[in-house]
Each structure stands twice: as C-alpha cells, then as structure tokens.
Length: 287
Image (tube, rainbow, N blue to C red; front, side):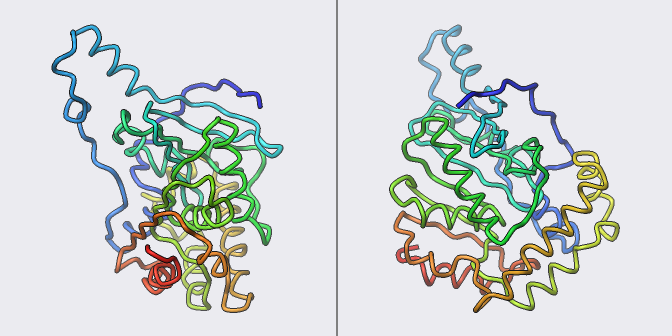
C-alpha cells in the first residue's frame, strides 16, 4: 500500500488531553490521562558513547514521523516514533486523534523499547476525507482499520493502548485478532450502553454548551460545523447500542480476549461509570 507523504503534524498546545478527557476534567475538575515528559537522557544509558554518536542516537530516537497510508479504501493518518522491538498502537477517543490524545506519550514513551504508532480513525484528526459517520458497526470497522493499518506498516504482532472509544475498539480488535495482539491496555472504556449512559451522552450533545476552553480548540481543528455535527452524530450512534439486548457493544467478545490485559478507570469518571470497567475486568480472564 502506498504511503502519502504529508506536512508535519501541527502542534495543538491547547489540547493537552483528549476530547473525552477534556470533557471529564473541565466540567468536573478531573485529571486528564497523560504521560510525563521524562528527559531522554534519563531513559537512555548514553554516557559511555562518543558525543557525536550520542547526538545521532538522540535525534533518531526523538523524531516523530507523520504520514498517511491507504487502508480499506481510505487514507489513514498516523504518527510513528521509536525503534524498539515492541510495537504499540495508541487508539484515541471520541473526536480525538493521535496528536490530541497522545501527544505526551508520543514524546515520552521509551523509544528504545517501543515502536509507537498513534492513528487518526477515519473521519477524525487528519484522516479526513471521509467524513466521520457512525453506522451500527462503526466500532467493528475501526477495529479492522486499526489492525489492517498495523499490518500495512509491516508489524507482525503489536500491543494496543485504547482510551475511551479507542478502548472499545481495542477490546474488539484483541478479541477478533488474538494471534496479532501481544498485550492490551484500556481505560475509560465500556462494553455496553445503558439508558443512564444515554442520558449522560445527551448532556454533551450541544457543543455550544461546552466551555470555551474545550470547544475553541476543536472548532479550530475541525471547523464549527463539522465539530458540532460530528458530536451530535456520535451521541446518536453510540446511543443506538442501548437498543440492543443488554445494551451490547462487545460484551460477547470479552471472553475471547486471551492476551495480558490491564484495565484502568477513574473512579470519579462522570462519562463512563465504574461498573463498566468492573464488567470488563470480570469477563476478561486474568485481567
């Protein structure tokens, strides 16, 4: 598959956390998941190397590639960094992108141990066109896109770190492609949608009611019309799962996840009640 070179990804200084994280932290004063900026010198044993070799190694280790590659009929944007043998895909949440949701991780994860890829799902970030839509199988579609992206990049096996909607996508991918997934980390995820969840989602439907701190950077990224319409479409799309038996998104797949799994959840998370994390933990053996 052909890679399409692209201009360097813009910095979004106002987006230090994901969209879902910003909604959680701004409205309810909760922390946004983020990595810490650990100086590279503290991570790499470079002291014994000649100066010029150290400089070359640091430069190679800290660079972040931004590109697009055609997958399943769309051009998906991704960022890649590191040269470690353990490949990791970072999956963003609702309205998020690799840069907005995982900027600190792209910068600070140990690049000697890991090769890190952060993607923009179709219709999000810089994977536009196409416009984002939410058919009944949109999580399944994202899971296939994510796995096929990593295979197009020639990774034979890789781990998944999924946040919010990206956590749901990661759960499905780990269940559907067990031979490809090494390890799994999910946080802020849910395997079903309840009527209480629908009530919570409708509370963020109208973006004009969001705080300016959250709304303005997204309007700059997407434009007001696309941002507002996509948020409404997301609320409708994810709320439809509540019409399924038990509100199922991927409950039946959880027992099929065999890789080592780590589940993270904020006990005061106002968008995803803790019961969802407890359900996932209960139904993934060994998590």
